Length: 387
Ligand SMILES: NC(=O)c1ccc[n+]([C@@H]2O[C@H](COP(=O)([O-])OP(=O)(O)OC[C@H]3O[C@@H](n4cnc5c(N)ncnc54)[C@H](O)[C@@H]3O)[C@@H](O)[C@H]2O)c1
Image 1 (tube, rainbow, N blue to C red):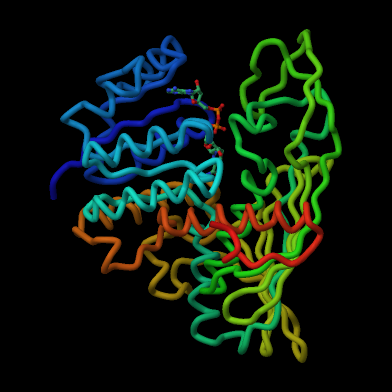
Image 2: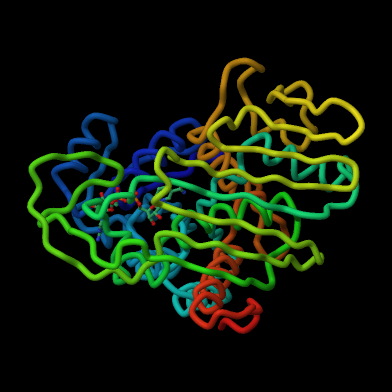
């Protein structure tokens, strides 16, 4: 099978995780990286034995050796870079959220119509966790009967203090939504995946707990802790929390909340699905186990076990039971699905992808904007109202 040469733009927190993931997939060759922080990128290139390191991402995009490009830059660069990748006739794997706004994501969807051979994935990676895939297939097979409800949350605490700051706070970099676009979007994608149905209506409340935050005069790396910092006051418009009632296309109701100010919670993404014949509960912080609830007999803890999973999931789980798999493995699974799609010469027009597509990223951007509109106008909003 042909080797696929790959480049990564943006070598911050998530760029390094992509680097790790692509290296775990066969027939994929990481040949170049690029970051505005060129000295850091050069250090990575040397440390990880990557042949080329570009200061300017345009050079990486134009490199004729490269067929697939990962866009791991902050949100405000997703449209600009994704467009250029597609226009150069290359495949793109973009970070989420797909764009800052629906106006931006719609432009990518329009552009892809002109490039039907371009494969375009977006990194909603939690859906690729083995037990989430297992839950999806089991629900589809009717194992818990008819689905009645879905509920859950994504809670973090890394923006709990007014001195916590990151580019995600500022709408020019993140977009008008922060907490929903950044982590609520992961809950939305995971929930839509297990339900096999999309959110079509929302009713939301949102809170900006810190209308003023103290911004360090120099930027602090995502999730890092630093002392002796000088600050300047910044007015904040993006939300720290949102609570959302949701309606799915298949008629099922649900509710989720997301927060970046919940002390003690780190990456607490969880969901529970209640059906007529049982329930499932899964939390990504304990991603190798799932609770299965019964009314008339003891409830069970299901441990990830490749031998007991539905056959459709076997490509997405590697370790024997007892050796934990986690978030990095889900990332790798997302990329495995993406590269397999390319290697099998599949097309978006005819083939269903397991990884999240740009079209799905666009829908999630619409749900995100519907949530903001609903909270601002204090009413139910149909996702169709957003264009
Ligand atoms: N899928 C996930 O689970 C997940 C997790 C974390 C972040 N993300 C997404 O990944 C993206 C990046 O987030 P992060 O946490 O890695 O941020 P980060 O701030 O840690 O890294 C961003 C990197 O992009 C670089 N960059 C900025 N402008 C650039 C340019 N013009 N050219 C090249 N490089 C440039 C920065 O120097 C930095 O190294 C965001 O869109 C975020 O939502 C996704």
